[in-house]
Structure formats: C-alpha cells, structure tokens
Image (cartoon, rainbow, N blue to C red; front, side, top):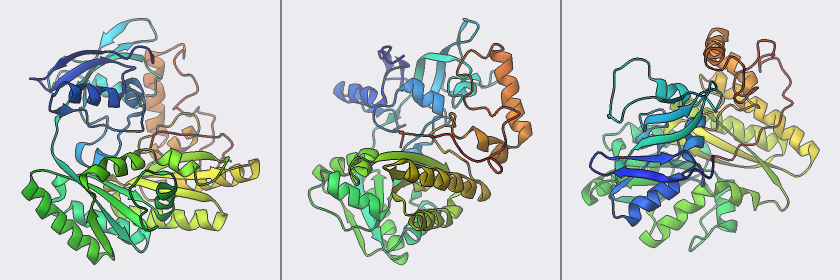
Length: 391
C-alpha cells in the first residue's frame, strides 16, 4: 500500500483531513505547514510511519502524554477492504457518533488481520507554541519518579511530551547526533511544554521545582535553533543506538505499565541487562508508562542472551499489571504472551471475531492471535526473533 500515499482533501474549517493509507505522518504535517494551515496530526511514531501502519499497530509516539494514542478518536473513519472483497467505510465524518459498534476501533491494532485499510479521515489539532527543556538526574529511578508528580500538578496539561533517555542513550546522541554541544551522560528527561508564554513560564517553574526535589542537578531550555535538532535526535534513537557498536544489530522492544510501576520496571530492567552483559539504550514515553529497550548484538550467542532478556522484560511488565506492547504491536514474536496478559476468554473472543470476518484466514495468518495449542509465555521457551523499529 506504500504507493497509495496521496492526501485527498483537507477540511480546515472542520479540522480534519482525508488521505490514503500509504501517506506518512511527517508528509501530512509538512503539507499542512506549507499551506500555512495552523493544524497538525499529533500522532508521531517512528520516522516514516504510514497511516495504514499506524492504524494496524494502534501506535502513539512522543505526543501520547498530551494527545493519546491511535485509539483516542484521531481516526474519524477508515475505508477497509474486507477478506470477502467488500469495501466498507466504518463511520461518517462527524466528530462523534453513538451509532452502533465502534467499528473503526475494531481495525485499530488488528495488525491487518481483519481488513486492508485504503483510506482514512484524520482529526487534526491546533498548533500550539512549545518550548523544549531537559532535566538530568543521578539515576533512572529518580528521573522516572519525578514524572507522575509533574503530570498530576495543576500544570500537567501544558506538557505535550515527557521522554526518558537513559545515560547510554545520551552517550549515543553525543556520538551520533547533531547537537551543538555534547550533553553530560546522565539519565535525562526531555520535555515539550506548550501554551502561551505565561503558561510555559509557570509550568517550567513547577517542573524545575519538582525535578530538583527528585535529585535533578540540571534543568534548562534548549535554544530555539537547537530544540528541533535535539528532538530529531530523540526520534532517531534507533540509528543513534546502533552507532554505539560497529556492525551491531538492534532488537527493539517495548512494554507499558501503570506509571506508578514504571520506576521499578526501568530499574530492574537496567539491572538485568547490565548483569547479562547486554549493551543497550532505553528511551521511553514515560508520561504514560511506556518505554523501549534497544538491545545490541553482534553474534548468535549475544542474540540468545538478548532473546532471554526480552522474555524476562515482558513477564516483568505483565506481573506489574502492564502489557507486552504499548505501541509496537504483537506481530508473531509476542503472540505467546497474550494469554497471560488478557486471559483465555478474551483471546478466544478475538479469535471469534477473526473467524467471523475472515473465515478462510486469508489476511495475515499466524499474526497477533496465539493458536489454542500454543503454550503461554509463562511456560514456553521463546524461540522466535522479534525486531521492532517503531519507537
């Protein structure tokens, strides 16, 4: 579907846009900016992500702390080709509807197992002035612990993004990035604060006070000309991480837990990877409990060690009332965990929907749903490799 990448119409007055499924989110926002339309599409997963792919995986990105995920009404309707060959549109273009099942969301996160998305109508948001700030901490636990207090403050709604970059990720940015000057190699939070100048000033004062209370020894705003480069380095975390080790490959994975459990999860994960001798970086959308581990390996033995570490990471997250994937999707590599996370009844309901829509199992067979005979992740030995790239 990558060649179907046209923007079909822009309804500025209504704040929405229709496009084909191969359109990329950066292309959409660049077009809006070039046309001087003060709106943007706020879902921002990895560079190059297409609208169809974003619907398939139920993605989000760095803006999720303020704007939510793909499941949060950003897709007003979608056009889908069903396995039968029938073409349907899931909803009208109205901003809300109480008419029947929410069939749009049925396809969001279904990873192409129920239908092929050809077009979508996207809800847009107004562009709001933002400033980028960073705070650095003595360890990752202190950094993550500060986040929820900030978000629960009266100025939390002014935070567009709260991103964690651990010390190894900061080292990678210094090595591979284009920042004007290298940053200290410490566990770091990146913030995007949005609003009028007065709101940005008041919010930044609160953020600085709380981060200082949690051990931060540095809080500063990036200069306007540096802010875009700094954020671009965050978006290209994968390529920066690979640059740390020549000829390395990278296994990226993500999990998500309730935000109060995130400090424990991140700390235990870093301890586990250090004990296993894994060279890795961590980046995360810590405002909503989601983080990504990027683990490097150069040979089959290192791949085996990484494989086992991913297995432990997923079970650690599920034990903390979390999920095996916050936004990457299940695919093949994480099917075994769904039964542990959701229970057999919920998984069987998903299979029932699949059988009803695709009785011949034509679309993405073997993806997303564990077969009834597949052992659960708690008892199986993980053998399938799983390489995600949307971070």
